[in-house]
Length: 120
Image (tube, rainbow, N blue to C red):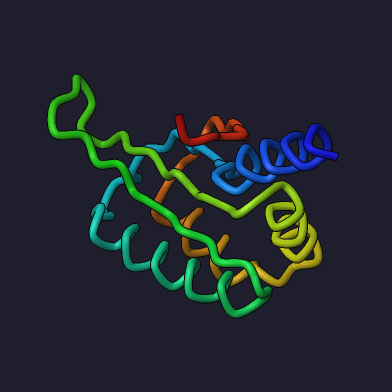
Protein backbone atom coordinates (compact mmCIF):
# COMPACT_ATOMS: atom_id res chain seq x y z
CA UNK A 1 0.00 0.00 0.00
CA UNK A 2 2.83 2.41 0.87
CA UNK A 3 4.46 1.68 -2.48
CA UNK A 4 1.26 2.52 -4.37
CA UNK A 5 0.79 5.71 -2.35
CA UNK A 6 4.42 6.81 -2.95
CA UNK A 7 4.17 6.06 -6.67
CA UNK A 8 0.91 8.02 -6.92
CA UNK A 9 2.37 10.99 -5.06
CA UNK A 10 5.46 11.01 -7.30
CA UNK A 11 3.29 10.87 -10.40
CA UNK A 12 1.12 13.74 -9.16
CA UNK A 13 4.05 15.96 -8.23
CA UNK A 14 5.77 15.34 -11.55
CA UNK A 15 2.69 16.33 -13.54
CA UNK A 16 1.52 19.22 -11.38
CA UNK A 17 4.39 21.41 -12.54
CA UNK A 18 4.39 20.27 -16.17
CA UNK A 19 3.23 22.58 -18.93
CA UNK A 20 2.95 22.46 -22.67
CA UNK A 21 4.83 25.33 -24.31
CA UNK A 22 4.69 26.52 -27.87
CA UNK A 23 7.71 28.56 -29.01
CA UNK A 24 7.32 30.70 -32.13
CA UNK A 25 10.21 32.39 -33.99
CA UNK A 26 9.00 35.52 -35.76
CA UNK A 27 9.93 38.75 -37.47
CA UNK A 28 8.18 42.12 -37.50
CA UNK A 29 6.98 43.21 -40.91
CA UNK A 30 7.76 46.71 -42.20
CA UNK A 31 5.61 49.43 -40.68
CA UNK A 32 4.70 47.44 -37.55
CA UNK A 33 5.97 47.67 -33.98
CA UNK A 34 6.55 45.23 -31.16
CA UNK A 35 4.00 47.18 -29.10
CA UNK A 36 1.38 46.42 -31.75
CA UNK A 37 2.30 42.73 -31.59
CA UNK A 38 2.06 42.75 -27.78
CA UNK A 39 -1.43 44.29 -27.95
CA UNK A 40 -2.63 41.65 -30.44
CA UNK A 41 -1.08 38.92 -28.32
CA UNK A 42 -2.71 40.20 -25.12
CA UNK A 43 -6.12 40.16 -26.80
CA UNK A 44 -5.39 36.63 -28.07
CA UNK A 45 -4.56 35.41 -24.54
CA UNK A 46 -7.71 36.98 -23.12
CA UNK A 47 -9.76 35.18 -25.78
CA UNK A 48 -8.00 31.84 -25.16
CA UNK A 49 -8.74 32.12 -21.46
CA UNK A 50 -12.45 32.64 -22.14
CA UNK A 51 -12.72 29.36 -24.05
CA UNK A 52 -11.82 26.71 -21.47
CA UNK A 53 -11.44 26.21 -17.74
CA UNK A 54 -7.67 26.07 -18.22
CA UNK A 55 -5.52 29.22 -18.13
CA UNK A 56 -2.95 30.12 -20.77
CA UNK A 57 -0.07 32.54 -20.52
CA UNK A 58 1.93 34.08 -23.34
CA UNK A 59 5.18 35.99 -23.45
CA UNK A 60 6.66 38.14 -26.20
CA UNK A 61 10.44 37.87 -26.11
CA UNK A 62 11.90 41.07 -27.52
CA UNK A 63 15.58 41.16 -28.44
CA UNK A 64 17.73 43.60 -26.49
CA UNK A 65 20.81 42.74 -28.58
CA UNK A 66 20.65 40.99 -31.93
CA UNK A 67 22.00 41.23 -35.47
CA UNK A 68 18.34 41.59 -36.54
CA UNK A 69 16.29 43.64 -34.11
CA UNK A 70 13.07 42.86 -35.99
CA UNK A 71 13.14 39.27 -34.75
CA UNK A 72 11.25 38.18 -31.66
CA UNK A 73 9.66 35.09 -30.14
CA UNK A 74 6.43 34.12 -28.52
CA UNK A 75 6.18 31.53 -25.79
CA UNK A 76 2.62 30.32 -25.28
CA UNK A 77 2.17 28.29 -22.09
CA UNK A 78 -0.73 25.88 -21.80
CA UNK A 79 -1.53 23.87 -18.68
CA UNK A 80 -1.15 20.51 -20.43
CA UNK A 81 -1.33 18.86 -23.88
CA UNK A 82 -5.11 18.52 -23.58
CA UNK A 83 -5.44 22.28 -23.12
CA UNK A 84 -3.22 22.94 -26.14
CA UNK A 85 -5.26 20.44 -28.17
CA UNK A 86 -8.53 22.14 -27.23
CA UNK A 87 -7.21 25.51 -28.40
CA UNK A 88 -5.66 24.01 -31.55
CA UNK A 89 -9.03 22.44 -32.46
CA UNK A 90 -10.74 25.80 -32.07
CA UNK A 91 -8.05 27.41 -34.25
CA UNK A 92 -8.64 24.85 -36.99
CA UNK A 93 -12.39 25.50 -36.73
CA UNK A 94 -11.77 29.19 -37.49
CA UNK A 95 -12.44 30.58 -34.02
CA UNK A 96 -9.15 32.51 -34.11
CA UNK A 97 -9.28 33.84 -37.69
CA UNK A 98 -9.58 37.47 -36.53
CA UNK A 99 -6.35 37.14 -34.55
CA UNK A 100 -4.56 35.18 -37.26
CA UNK A 101 -5.27 37.97 -39.75
CA UNK A 102 -3.87 40.59 -37.35
CA UNK A 103 -0.76 38.52 -36.60
CA UNK A 104 -0.17 37.81 -40.31
CA UNK A 105 -0.48 41.50 -41.12
CA UNK A 106 2.17 42.51 -38.56
CA UNK A 107 4.48 39.48 -38.35
CA UNK A 108 6.03 36.60 -40.20
CA UNK A 109 6.50 33.48 -38.09
CA UNK A 110 8.57 30.83 -39.83
CA UNK A 111 9.10 28.26 -37.10
CA UNK A 112 7.23 26.82 -34.15
CA UNK A 113 8.09 24.04 -31.73
CA UNK A 114 5.91 22.39 -29.10
CA UNK A 115 7.57 21.40 -25.82
CA UNK A 116 6.62 19.69 -22.61
CA UNK A 117 8.23 21.62 -19.77
CA UNK A 118 8.68 20.54 -16.19
CA UNK A 119 9.87 22.64 -13.30
CA UNK A 120 13.23 21.45 -12.04
